[in-house]
Image 1: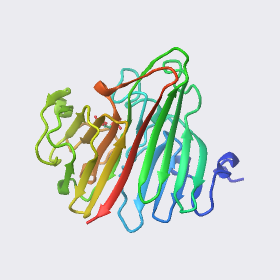
Image 2 (image 1 turned 60 degrees about the vertical axis):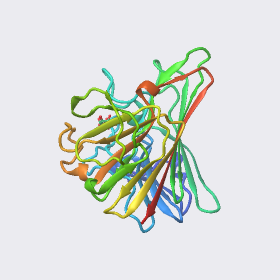
Image 3 (image 1 turned 90 degrees about the vertical axis):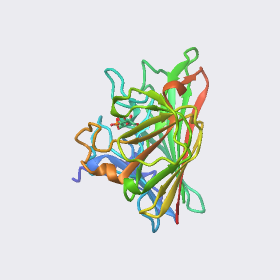
Image 4 (image 1 turned 45 degrees about the vertical axis):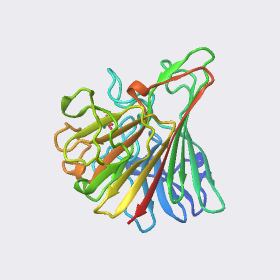
Length: 301
Ligand code: TA6
């Protein structure tokens, strides 16, 4: 008897030619999506998108070759969903709980033009008791762009919940030395590289180039970012909604990294992360909803 069958309650959400559900790395349930423009994939563990690629283009999303794929462990690369906190926390996993929890696949849909939407829901009370009655969903819409939405509703009757959210996207690049990042010129940022402990710095007038360990949180910033890759000859546009924080990160060779990271992988990636973190954290009143949305576009040149 094959033991690695996909459970029936998942199989029934498959859509012929559009949505297939398989056991991915580590035997973890993986939703594979195909559209007329692109392919994508997302693990139920952490609602973690691990791939998006437009037909005829290199992958847009970076994945570490050394990533774990195991319950309770974070996937390295892709789009970590950071929630209900961002960054380190005494006694808790980095970047919150939801990235190491199993989400339910709530719905799949394909529109007549071929666009695919996949909705994942965090099992009820997964974040209790500290964050009770927080209905949390992640929606992935795949077409010639990739749209990701993290939606949290405070269903508590009387408790305001203080939250951070962030879609921590790892982008695949030709070489880190061939990049320039536009959209944050002159924007002040908090510097967390080389132990700078969040020192506030003035922004650079020119588009950002990554030439060393870079770990910057740009507060009060809703700007669209553009990643220009002179090696892959493409521009990636990171458009965001309901996000006041942008984080730019590359560990270079100096940030101490865990064993799920390859020594030279910093050359092929940059993180441009969109959310509401640190001074932009959210106070979600009873009955209110936060809806963080990121749309990824790419264009060859
Ligand atoms: O967003 C930048 C950052 O906070 C870095 O400090 C680095 O730790 C990165 O996130 C990766 O975090 P992770 O928990 O995925 O190892």
